[in-house]
Amino acid sequence: MSVFAGLVERLAELLQPLFHASAAAAAIVLFTALVRLLVHPLSRAAARGQQARAKLQPRIAELRKKHARNPEKLQKAVLELHAQEDISPLSGLLPGLLQLPAFFLLYHLFSNTTIGGRSNALLTHSLLAAPLGGRWADALGHGGLLGTAGLVYLALFALVAAVAAYNYRRTKRMTAAMPVPAGDGGQVPGLGAVTKAMPFLSFFTLVTVAVVPLAAALYVVTSTTWSAVERSVLYR
Image (cartoon, rainbow, N blue to C red; front, side, top):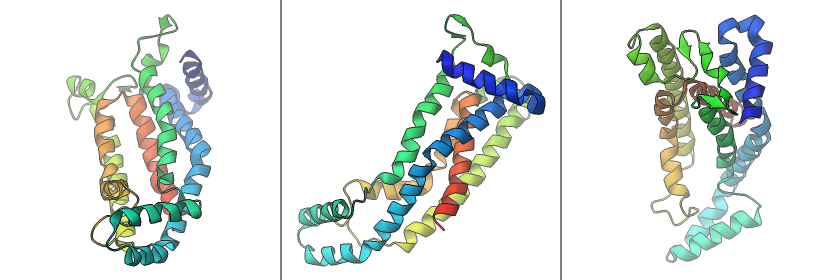
């Protein structure tokens, strides 16, 4: 973790002339962008996979007719079809899963008072008036909802809510464009529940931002916003 802390501190030093007291916050945003650039090839692959799955729908419809009275055989045939076309039904989850280590590193980095036996200097940094190691509850306890730190969180909540609403409308349009017949026999097992939950997933980001250290919240907000822009380009 000390190596990661050194990376954040170095980025903050480079950004100090531009962002002054908020240089560490800017470093976290830049770090998040670098992580997203690294996983971008997987995001592109996921977009191609979704397009390929859409092209399989006519063949899956034929399988439904063929195995209408045998759901188990239908599920097996659908899985075999995906394997035959070299398409992973869950490939779209990989970009998000690979970002989790970076998120947890930031979470632990700004949750510990010491790193490598020394005082954690990163906890002295802030975004405007909100400490990067603080949480929303801390902001409410020092100045209230409309205090200087509270206003930082309100701005983040507003951004997350806007992105979540955009993602919700977009996901609903995409799922409506690919209707699924009654029953889940033609789907990959478990995928139906994921599909139904997807339009609401972005709103859970509001809860995350409220309970994690501000540094980790910045990572989540930046990554979520990046995803919204990236998906609007890749899934045109």
